Image (cartoon, rainbow, N blue to C red; front, side, top):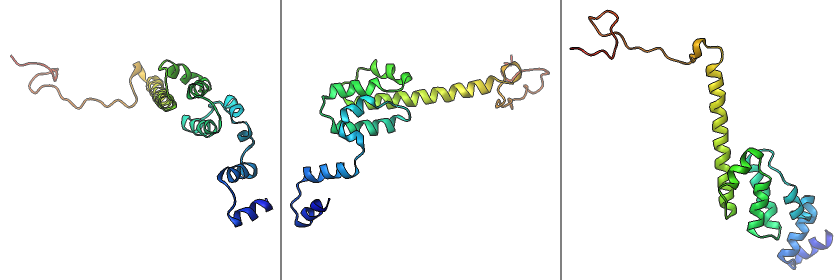
Length: 152
């Protein structure tokens, strides 16, 4: 590192030398073999977090976009994988957008299902505890008339 500092002060360091030195000093071990890191990477959290790490490693790996798309999709969460593969994305951008959209749909469906199960639990005759009673009143002058009754 002392040599590097002396070279930097003299202005003789090329970009590749600087880059390599930065990786040696501060880079995580996964950057030593980005392809191995990519093949071991699995989505365990959010799509955006997985994508961020995947793209970081993909830029360092020397592989085709087709292979990177395959790797990206193969390690998505199981509930997303098939939904994204069916779209047959041809670019990483399309693969990521498809996975993000499917993740949003999945989260929305889960929220709806939670609400439906809450709505149907513990209420008599399946009534929603959030249901608002109608404010409509029977038609004036008719006992037991309904709001929708017609006058003849």
